[in-house]
Length: 266
Image (cartoon, rainbow, N blue to C red):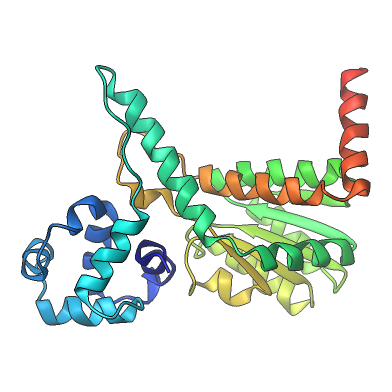
């Protein structure tokens, strides 16, 4: 497994010192291959023993093993020209797409589609910038003939969850997995026996703990770019994949075509 992906998935379970090591590795991964363990300890104000324990915690045999595996999964930067911004943005998106791709489980996509077809009502929720992704996904599902709606207002999503039933599927988009209104909504939905699917960046967070099915995506915050952080890019990449997989079935593809024609004819 890609150590960088393993670090992100388990990030919330790390101690304070381990998070410091994780942040440094995720944000400076190209440098790690040439760093001795003592150098990394110095850069992170930790110790070689702490790093050794951290390395084993993410599934690597040794520090050297981690370095080799990171090297295998690094994105090769394209050559920079006079306009560095073009290269910078391109590398950012490359990193997000590649790391998200490595986190996607194809069997989980099949489970998701089966669950989607089984449930009568689909409720997509997201807060702040994740609300934009929720609206987009909800609209796409509706255009494919599913009874789907999206909620980004905290009160509205909680009201809908309060009258949820076992026929409902709540699809939550939350990179952090700790947003209070999302957790509160899913807690209500779970109490009313609704099914829950989440899109999040971490393995162990409140949203994931409430979910029946979890999709993990790469968190752009680890790309360490302060100029442009498109926090929804990994979510939209996954949504594009799920939408494309759904349209492999004629019923969904035909409904999407019908809605497209309706808009074009207007």
